[in-house]
Image (tube, rainbow over all chains, first blue to last red; front, side, top):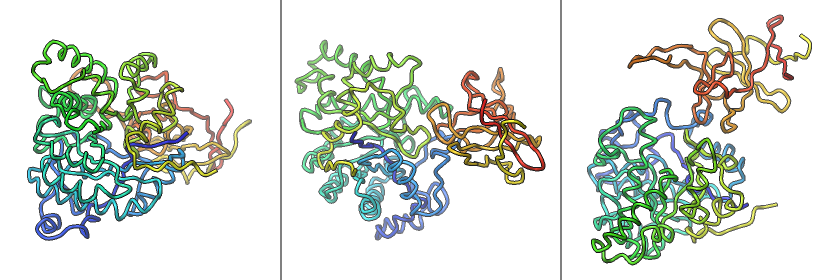
Length: 358
Length: 120
């Protein structure tokens, strides 16, 4: 089976790996400016919930920068016979929390150059996501055009924490650039804090585990907004990938959106289909962390209601604490070819499918 | 000592984390608790098959009726390396649902050497 991991985190030990890729004012800020942590910490506003044990799996303990790849290769890529790993960075999406969008864009630019320079050449299985600052849509669009043509850059990535819903016309220059460069737009769990002040509806929750279970709230907002604001009518070939935001909520939100649209379509006369139809044609969800009900039939009925065979894409979230191993996710056998690989190949057209070596 | 086989020397067993010993095809986590007792668990989490014993050895909080935090079982808990499920090293039980157990093996100490009974 051809396996594409849609969420494989390429870590660093020390954010100063970006220094050679920075220049001028923003390099000064990066080298000498204040940051959340000791030298080597990546500048971003932190969320008010700290993971009680840290994010990384405890059997992954890199000492120097090169360990990050070597451990990933041994404990993930080779172990699970993964054909393609889509690199999703780690801290860089947190630039969305910074008030200064120009500094945020400069950090993205440095990260993207580092990722292309350091990570992509390491392994033929790697394809990269370029990170942009969503609150600097003009700068983000420039960055997409600058590096989006690289043969192994396959998507544009932001955090799902945002200061406004992603359907807002404020962001549309980003989608125009994605369309022009033929790249999907992906949002990955993260970016809670700083200028993204409202990641949890009704106000901040208290404990990490309760909060983490609720973070898909923002993804629901983005999904509704992208559909209602007509993003998929303006760019009907645009694919949006929602990563690590849970899955089982999708049918219930689509049912509600469809019901309301049928009554009140006049508010959004630019739409030509039901919300659920835009979802099926334009939005893809990554599986991890796939919900684990006591009775798997309950999960499968839910996945069927969202056409999961065609809308889900396997993701591991390596090397995080809620990692899903390839052989441990519970989906119907006759969906596996699609979810582990074929759906991703439909979304990421640049991936060259090479059969596994014998 | 019938059915027991040599696992490791007792001085090899660390106190702040599991000592991982490969014995045949099995990876075993060996623990030395504060009371000096030795325990052996299969290094395989019953949840998702991760390297259970490569996680941190620590304590946990006692069930309380109010907003109180009483830290108990200091160094008697192993947290799985991946998803952090907590297991009682002495019993192998998963703290949240004690019906779920990590595989626990009987051990014996003789002449400063640890022996393990792999068959049940």
